[in-house]
Amino acid sequence: MQPPIRNIRAESRDHENVRMEHENKAIFDCFLSVTTCFVLSVIYVSSLYVWNFQYDRNHPSTIKRRFFSVFVMMFVSPVFLYVALNKKSLEKASIWEIMGFKTQGLIQAFFIPWILTMVLFMGPLCMQLISGLLKVYTEPMYWITNAQNLIWLRNHVVAPLSEEFTFRSCMLPLLLQSFNPITAIFLCPLFFGVAHFHHMIERMRKGLDFKTAFLISCFHFTYTTIFGTYSAFLLWRTGHFMSTFIAHAFCNHMGVPDIQELLTYKGAQRIGIFAIFIAGILLWGCLLNPLTEPSIYENNMIWNSKV
Image (cartoon, rainbow, N blue to C red):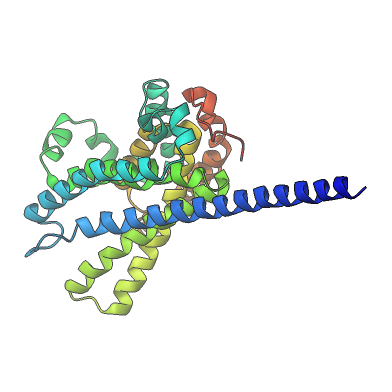
C-alpha cells in the first residue's frame, strides 16, 4: 500500500507547485502591468519638461515644443505595451487592434459615444443655447480661426489624441490582462489623474502659494480621474480608440460645468436648467450600457466580458 500513498503525495506536491507557480506568475504580471503604466506616466509628464522654458504653457514656443514631446511619446508608448503585453494576446489580435485602432465599427465609435457624452452635458449645452453660443459653432469662421489657434488645437486635438493614446490605449490593455475589468477601469484613470498634478508646478511659478495650488490640483485630479474612468469604460466596451478621443475632445471643449453661471439665472429658468442638468445625468446613466454594447462596435477583444 505504500507506493500508492507516495504517488498520491507526489501528485499533491505537483499540484501545489503548479498552483504556486500560477500565483507567482499572476503577481508578477500585476506588478509588471502597474509598473509599466507608472513608468509611462512618468515619461509622459517628463517629456513636457525636457525643454528649458522661458515662457508659460500657453506661449506658442512652449506649445510647439510640447507638441513634439507628446508626438514622440506616441512612438514610445506602444513599445512599452508590446514588451509588457502577454504574448498570447498578440497571437489573437494585432497590437493596433488591442490599442483600439481598427476599421470595423469605426463610424459607430465616432458618433454614438459623442452623442452619449452630449447627453451628459445637456445642462451646459442648454445654457449655451440660451446664451447664443451654440449658434457660433455653426459659423465656418469659428472653426477656421480656431484651427490656426495653438491653444485650441492643444485642448481639442493634441491633448486628447496623445493622452488617450498613452493613458488609455497603451495602459488599459496591460491592466485588463492582470485585473478584472472593473478593477482595471478604476485603476487606469489614477495614472491619468496623478499625471495632471504637474500643472501644480506651473501654478506656483505664476505666484500661487503651495496650499492653493495643491487644492486646485486636487480638484483637477478628481475631475480628470472621473472622466478617465468614463473613458476607460468606453475603450473597454467599444474596443475603439476613436470613442475615447471624441469623448475627451468634447469634454475638453465643454470644460467643467459652470455652476456659477447657472446661479445667474433667476426663478423658473434656473429651476428648469437645473432640472435639465439632472435629467442629462440620469439619462446618461440609463443609456451608458445600451449605447456601449460591444456588439454595436464589433468588439470581440479577448477581455470583453460583462462587468
